[in-house]
Amino acid sequence: MATPSHGAHSASTAPGAWDTAYEFKATLLLFLGFGLVGLDRWILPPLFAAKMGEDLGLTPADLGNLVGALGIAWGISAFVLGNVSDRLGRRKVLAPAVVFFSLMSALTGLVQTFLALVMIRVLMGVAEGAVAATGVATSVEASHPKRRGMNNGIFQCGFALFGLALAPVLATQLLQYMRWQYVFMVVAVPGLIVAAFMWKIIHDQMPGMTMHASHAAGKRPSIGEMFHHKNVILAMVNLLCAMAGIFVMSAMMPNYLTGDASYLHLTVQQMGFVTSAIGVGGVLGQFGMPTLSDVFGRKPVVSGSFLVSAIFLYIFTRQGGDNLALLFGLLFVASLANLGALSVIAGPIAAEAAPPGLIAAVAGLVIGAGEVFGGGIAPAIAGNIATSYGIQYTMYFAIGGQVLGTILSLLLHETAPRKLGAVSPAVATR
Image 1 (tube, helix red, strand yellow):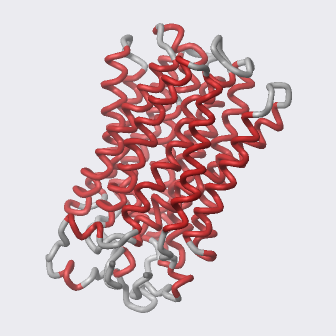
Image 2 (spheres, one colour; image 1 turned 180 degrees about the vertical axis):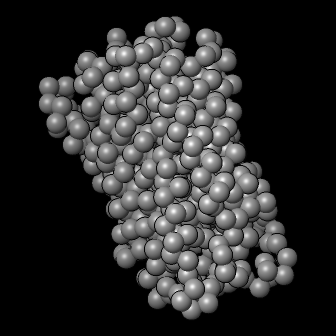
Image 3 (spheres, one colour; image 1 turned 30 degrees about the horizontal axis):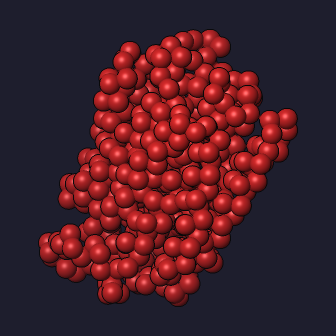
């Protein structure tokens, strides 16, 4: 379906001219920027469970709708602004987007009504979607093909480290010293600093890179060409499954563990500890699985990750609240596998299915599809399940996403450069 000339891999450099210094700096900035996306996004659920929901008179369904509204906005923005970055350049989209979502995070602490919260989180989602799609393209363009999966993993694991590992602990600890409103403002500050460095360092195109001839000549591929490789559609539905799992877990876990309507009735500090397993496991998964996929292939790593996540999350649901270490360990493995699958799909699989000149657009399309349902509609459905039937049943919804992902990932087409014997920047990887 796709021709060998398609994809991020069609870029080339002269022998020995690969800019490894820029590759390192770009990967570090993307890691920090996407980490702050995760922090500003996932500081909400623990604050909501600990104090915010009670103060504003909100329910778990409201939390699901807040998370869902941001996810839907993220999904639409990922495609639209990813496409814009393909046309205008990476830096011109990345740096302003980081500034904007940081400001929206600060504003979250100032609003007092549910409608205002929804509006602020939607605007935040617009900016964060731009960072996600443009970040994938920037990472691919800065990375040598043999390090493409690894660098995408480093970039994406910032999301889990800052957002899912540190956010629950940071939120619950800061609440001992300040009101929840001020926590949102504190976590917004680092984004402004990272944005300034992005503006100074990130290139719109990798120095010395010559794109595929048709792109270099100004013949931009049409939107329809995004679908020439079958992995584009498959990545969209597989990412939907991955995001349905991790975002339902992340949004509902604090309320599953603590609060009046909780299932395990842990304390706030115990909740922060157990919930942080999602992020700690996610960091290793988002780094480790894309790196392993460079060696063993994208398809087997994604399929195996989905299966492991489903098994361990199911075992987690069968536990009581008396063994925190066991709860942490089970959630750690489930998250490691789930976010590992997500990173391979949203990063190297999406990029390697893209025509030249549309890397961010394809990444945005794949991320957008996953976000609209997995990050948007799924948490809203889970919130209503929690309100109508009980918080414990939301975990079975997440497990269903992992089981479906296991099945659908078997249809993916292998694109890893090493598996196909193509690791030179100038050689196609399909």
